[in-house]
Image (cartoon, rainbow, N blue to C red; front, side, top):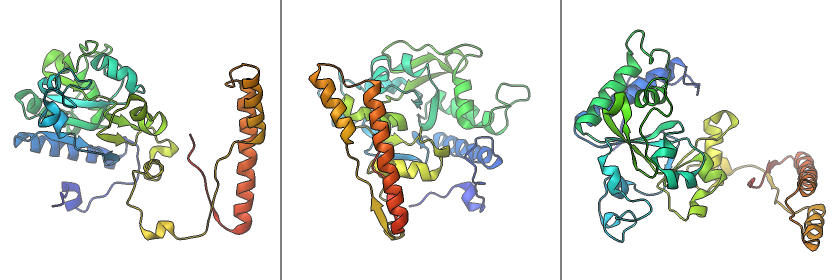
Length: 321
């Protein structure tokens, strides 16, 4: 079955702006917090996710701490690196915009609290506190009390971050090092806030740039296309996923046309500089080698662009590592 949002039923559409201050975005934020509230009221645990998240496998065994994964010796069992048991006490759990999955794995709540909570991946349980938070979160998005600190905010994520932290304090929550949860969240403890491990719920920098999943030897549940640059628009996000082999939705028209592919190579000057440094027992990681690489790659790109233009073809660049 396909879920149809209230805005879609009304024939409404976003105005094309990715700015959180746009009128349509504010309406969309109110709609989705309202839908989350509606489902939590019905007694469902809700996994709220942005559309620019690719799910690689089901997070249910971790979020619900169920099945083989939760048992001794399981992926998320007692004593494991990402034990699921401690997260069961969280009424709400949220992902992070932080940049270091490694530091997050060590510090968990203490590291997560120091950055921006990203509601693009958010989990709410239908506990008494979880329902109360969903009620007030939605209310503060669509009709914040006059004079409150929520009036000037323009997105559900901004409201979420302000609600969870004590005013004029940082990080404004009790976040013990190594703990999976943060205490004293939302008005001094009205809710227990969980930290979704950055290594399992990776943001764009952690996955596309760092490939932290390989370095940390983990199998993430999801990849969120944040840190996409290029206006953070759909084109940039799709290309990020495409380069990572996670985008399989291109139609036949995407592959039609005349193309010229540029395969990356090591410029001769760079190979010579690397060899000279190693022969001298020195590290090749210095400004001379970097400058030679820059000159070589720019010359290679110039030649490829000229050839593609002469042949009336689109130039396909190699992945930039």
